[in-house]
Length: 474
Image (cartoon, rainbow, N blue to C red; front, side):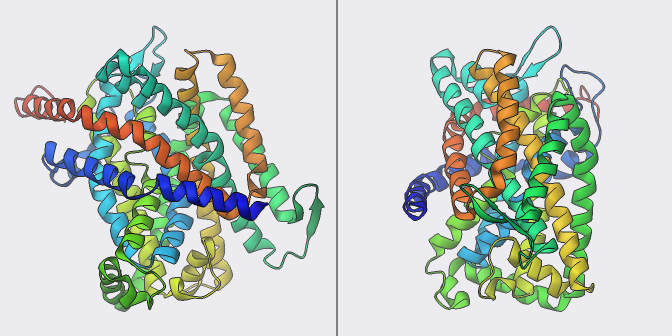
């Protein structure tokens, strides 16, 4: 029964994440890159400067940095550790190359999303801000397209509850905890409808559910406050650990880079036929890249809309740094670690096991310490992603229901229940469901970005003219 169900999911996933959607996302990123003048290159230093410098004025609920951290809390997750490993494990080292290419164009996409989120957001008399693709579809494209905004919001709720937000993250946490504390499953319990399960998984899901509930009950401001503390902390720990690994194996880096580039265009020459075509490497790289940085997905602009700012372009630049940090920095470090240690070639490893092997082999620490550091990063990464995606999906539900907060509160508890049962879902089914909803969510958003690309170009040009004339202070 489960095998048939998995086969159906895989067929749907292959259709959703086929060539048309990859072309749509990449073409959208390319179009926006051209229309904003390759802004992700020459304005990146300014974006990084503004990332940590909040505006003193402007409507909104949280600081620009708080909005970015909320967005990063949702993007820096298992995709950076498990997703990269899965992409390279199934698509070969070349998947990392296509992940970086997708992220480069994705920076222009994320910039445009953040800009449009501020331009078309709605702020009520209590300074409660609501915005994102559903509003820039409805207000930017016109009321006749409201149904497309509703469709996006519906998929957003599903992605949060059944995809990125819950099952995928919790599964990653419980697997990492179980592999570290009880790898041989010595301590197990028999559960109805689940079968034999490790006690570490049961305890981890219970503790995680309680922690998630304590934060979510406090609403968006508590989510932002927790994110502002945990996101920089966990990102620094992971980057320092990954840099240490790369420096300790610096002589292997040139060869790893050559392998990645060669495998991107001729996978068979590197993988020995395990990965049959460039299209497979490209598909896995783009799909996992989008899963990780969410550029084109339409999630980050929901967080950006809450920022205290009066300049759409400025928040767009801040939003753009999210893709740079998430994929071009963190995912690249994970990928290089996996390739230069040869972890992707070890038989029998999948998901987090590949990255764990890379850390244990590449770091100059005892294997247990290396595994512990990775587990700690994964737990923090996944925990904040759970919080961020609850925020996204609640805002989508708020739009769908016309602001009925009772529905949002009921959903919040359903979300907590989904977190609790997440570890008991099968790994393949979890990732496949997440991939499907990812793709479905991206379609309405990308349509809007194509249609509103002219608005993005005009706003960008006007902003930098005003800045040049001294009307906007740095």
